[in-house]
Length: 174
Image (cartoon, rainbow, N blue to C red; front, top):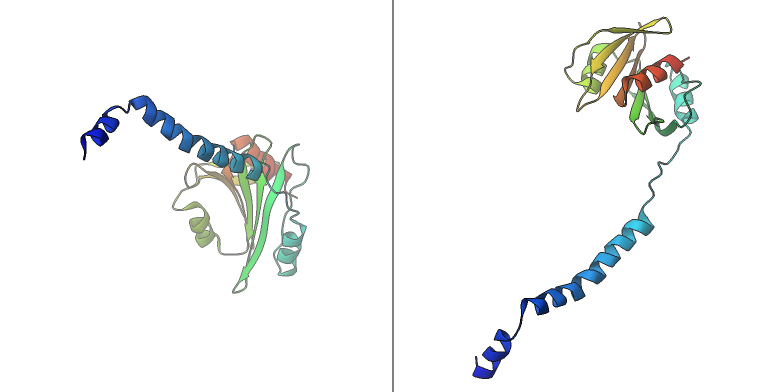
């Protein structure tokens, strides 16, 4: 380096560095915020679960459907899957409080279904909802579940929602 170049470098101050970074970071920050603002859609996509319920019934699953759910509840996913003669229906809901829960109905044997959906949790007691006995289970990763065991069908209401909302879903099934 020549004496003049070394002198120019030593004349630079931290303020110059900050200004140079600001010139680079401000436009980048504006672009990122613009994409987040313009590209975000905070509302869940509402789906009509009728087709999934119909498909499950046509495959021989005796389904129950929610009726009279509290205001603000929305169905956001619905899938009926048949695999080797076993039908499983899954309908996801966002509750009025913003919690998420899923209604699962299946004619799969209860033990493998519960292991698949809930892990190795054991029932934590019984809850009576509109005359029906439901088993309360801890779910995975902070979820809770209510399980209604029947001879040819198992119904689960599970998710990250308060127990009163899980009970409201279970009580609405007809």
